[in-house]
Image (cartoon, rainbow, N blue to C red; front, side, top):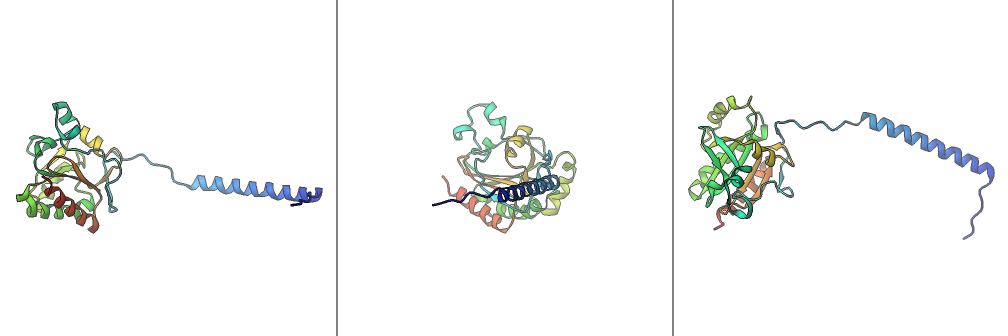
Length: 217
């Protein structure tokens, strides 16, 4: 292929056009950057979301009974899987060995949490005799705790409620701070599924996960 050299006058015009284009691109980029929102610091309190994501990669808690599915030491059991019930009792996830455990992290001000609670109430009534144990853990902070009693009456909650230890909260929300977050563990303490957010699709998925966990020996 033969290439003709660019005439000197054409070179000047081409160079001028190129410089003009670069200058315009630079101005557009600067304006775009100045108007783009900056990343905000996440709130200490997990926020709600109506957009559920099920089973994101690498869930922070894969076993309710500690590494390998067994609670080998007290330190292992209490490191990230302990909470305090409303009546002051200390409870660990490993205490539910042999049972299906659903841990729900919620707050009274969270709209999707309010949507999910009646479904959890129904699941506990429907499958409680088969070994299902739903536990609600409030993560709304000190300002939300006085509202829990009224929330219980409003929704007729009969499953136990509590407050997770700080270490547990840090682990659960390590890679996503949205609520509700719901963990379903089978009888051996293995994570069946983790749900983030709640809608009709998540409701069906949650019941299917509970049924699967109950079928595990």
